[in-house]
Image (cartoon, rainbow, N blue to C red; front, side):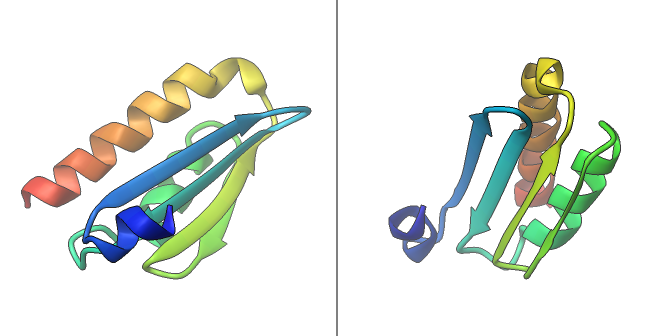
Length: 82
């Protein structure tokens, strides 16, 4: 994640165990990780926090993994195109 962020990119990491864990890192000012992750996870009953350049959180229902990834990608793409 750090190497992608250092090059100005955006990286997301999703891990499934007992819960769905999500990390988002950004090397561009266009993507506010804290806002995007917090808002996205809240849609699925989860929560997150952190800083503008890196945030992490989780969702209790692992069956929502595909939906969470899709929503996260859409929000990041929207921020990058602004």
